[in-house]
View 1 (cartoon, rainbow, N blue to C red):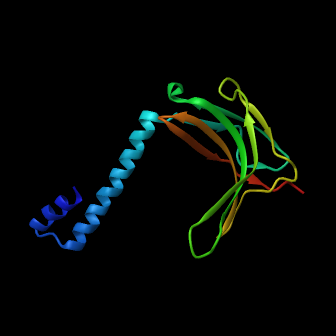
View 2: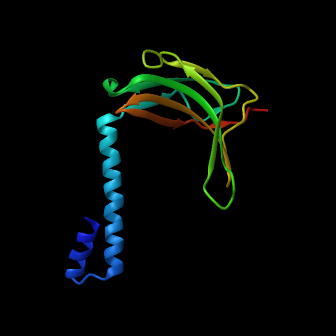
View 3: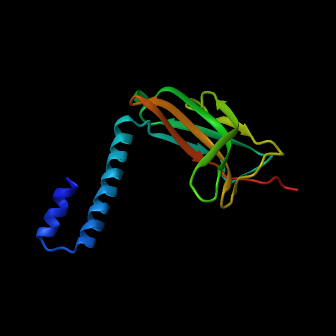
Length: 160
């Protein structure tokens, strides 16, 4: 398909570099279209709402999860997660992701759940090669695979 497109553009006397850029743009657009279609067909349509954001360590907030397409979501799990993400070596993109807290929230579809952030919790942080991420994670089996939606929550240091 790409070769045919390239020859069609060559027959129209379009510069080869411009043809290459156009075809790359078409590929990127096609990728987004396939991803959006897959989400529509097999996704869960998860939406998460929190009572406030950002939240300070030592404070409590409420979370609620709405699943738009429950027929696509088998084995639904909603979790409060804190994780460290790090680049192992500065010269490549090998990522190390390690959750340090995973707390499953019960019945957040029917009612909101209360989450208390410990007073000594590490705040959200981002640097060149490492970051601390707090998020609500929605996991479900859908379309033959595991669908995971991540909803970040900004956690600030406790007030002194």
